[in-house]
Length: 251
Ligand code: 4GX
Image (spheres, rainbow, N blue to C red):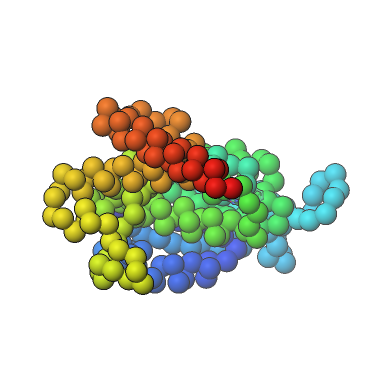
């Protein structure tokens, strides 16, 4: 049993997420609980404000300590992992998702405006960014992170359908096809229709390596290769370099 609590000014943001497809199924089975909590419910301010102007001047507002820290204290236990979504956080990767998915109680903190009073970070275990771009608030980031965590928890997705996923093995996924065998003159590769399981496995591994080499060579840098992968990657590099050379000659 895992629980994810999102502390947010906009709990309704998560309604369609909770009610859709695989996430809905996981929540229905009660292997995962997901709750969106409004931290405005915790403000002691007479006008229900949760934000204030920035000390020292400058444009914009910051989320203030009292409502946020009180909301955190009311919704965390000794074993809770408190995660703040922010562009200043550690970049989200599948490795980070796997680590977070080990925790049974996760509290996600979504900010707006210019973010949080710096002192709130003393109550946070991890600051996570979903990428180097700017969102209007932490909610879409919390949704992305929750989605990736929930699908890793037991029984959400067949586990053999994880293993070939991009990033689970450090490579991008190989090309996949469904019927018809020919569409608009484009054929499904013969090997995939051959029924020869070993040839299919080899082809998929090679095409995974090709896609990764062409699109995300950075993923290959930090990876160790089996001798089979090394050989297939060399073939891919030779093939792609040859293509490039003949393209150059025709320029
Ligand atoms: N990955 N944003 C959060 C407000 C804010 C600012 C500073 C904390 C500190 C984002 C991202 C993201 C925009 C959400 C600023 N909160 N969050 N918001 N990229 O861009 O996670």
